[in-house]
Image (tube, rainbow, N blue to C red):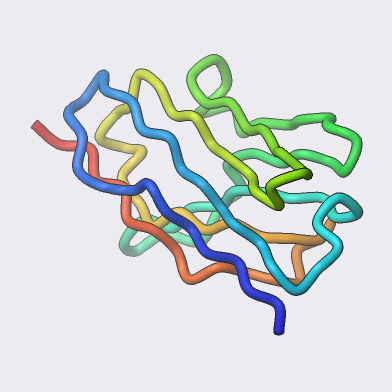
Length: 114
């Protein structure tokens, strides 16, 4: 019954911004560490950002200063604000619950291209 649903992906120009959302159900959301991961074609899935149940954050070096992870426990939702997007950010973005993750969403496509 656990479900994580990503939304907010799409096509954006380099330098643009997107905000991804991850809506969770079937878990006591506030008790879980959460994270965003991404997978580009031909590459392994990689960590983008994590946030603990008490709000501590961690980012991959490649996105530091550009992306911000946050959570709203009252809404059972996690967010990833992505600014100054680059073509190399193009990937399917997945949200995950658990530290380490044991629940995954289906992913949302982010394409950064002129």
